[in-house]
Length: 115
Length: 117
Image (cartoon, rainbow over all chains, first blue to last red; front, side):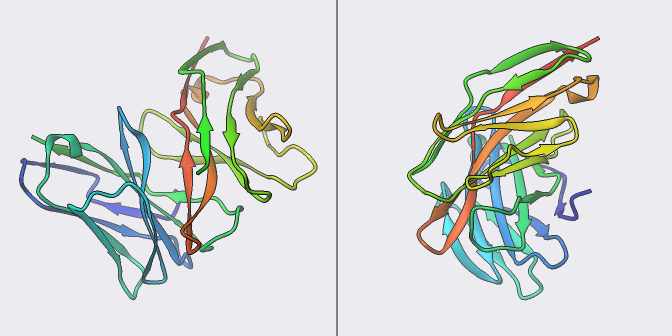
């Protein structure tokens, strides 16, 4: 158990809909990361938050947004969903903001299926 | 931009044998960190081992060791005495500094390891 909690574990929805994925980081971790894993794109970094502030952006679509709340939990909002958004979405956390060291601790992922 | 390359889509090994999973990286940073993660079929991402660029010795964690060759920019994972439970996807990753304000782990495409009895 990594200590990172993600809900829901599975989600099935239709194209055009909007969903929210939730993440609670490990106790004491200030940094939250969101990743998307699909068969064709592999593990793609989406966005990083640190202590409530957005710090780094990766390949995140404009239809996607995220935020980190004062209690450090984070939400990833996916809107106008398309079939290609079907993927496993991971949240990860770490204590540090930057620096080469320090592993990320991953949640179990939220599997999104768009029909 | 940094890049991680894993050239082996799939590897097959028998129980109790050792196996090496390849990873090469590209970076212009002097200080960097390399990571290996395991993803079993259940989907979770499990951290295995870390190597810092200034670490003089290769990292080891139980049956896992990292064969770090800085000049060749390679960070191969060695699993000794393979077990059936080692069957999984393995990802090599490196921390990348992004827009001077944050970092992220950038992952390779992964290698699927199959261990047979």
